Image (tube, rainbow over the protein chains, first blue to last red):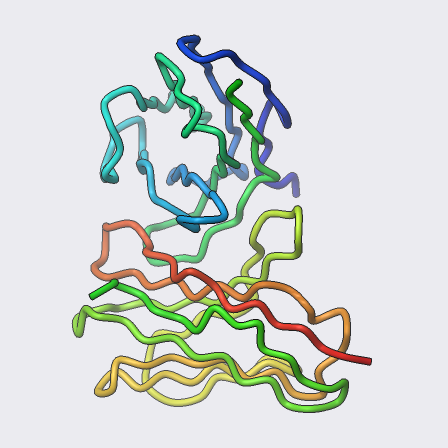
Length: 112
Length: 111
């Protein structure tokens, strides 16, 4: 069975630009969560979507947003990029909130 | 106090030894506990889950949970160099809420 697919794998953007990252969860998984991983802060929770509804949101500024489509695919958007947004962005899907995650390979975003 | 804490390491053990990785959490009502392994440059992969007090064994891995002490651990028996990775503890504080990850412990298994 296919895993969690994230695109693109790598991105280089300039400060002030915006970016959209995509995630396709495992078939049948309705919960999709997004995390930011940096060497200094570890894995920081961004948001979780379940059946097209944002169920939980982490402590990130409003520049970070997301959505989930009816086929469970999810996108996250970061507007007005800052240098500090450079990170590995990980998408994870699970069957229910009680189950462990399966992570995608991540999108490595570099802001210059 | 951070919600989920782990020793950052590195923890170095010789090949064939038992590696013991520890994690403490702040919310006494936490329900679900997971261990992930993350190799350098890769994404985390789930290796163990535990939901009730006691031990849970899966091959060379044993997860131990003590809710009274708010403590969860992972034992790796017969450690191999291929076990060298960062191990992340994740706690689901309340059903329907997101997982909180610890900072991870870097394990190095020396041949």
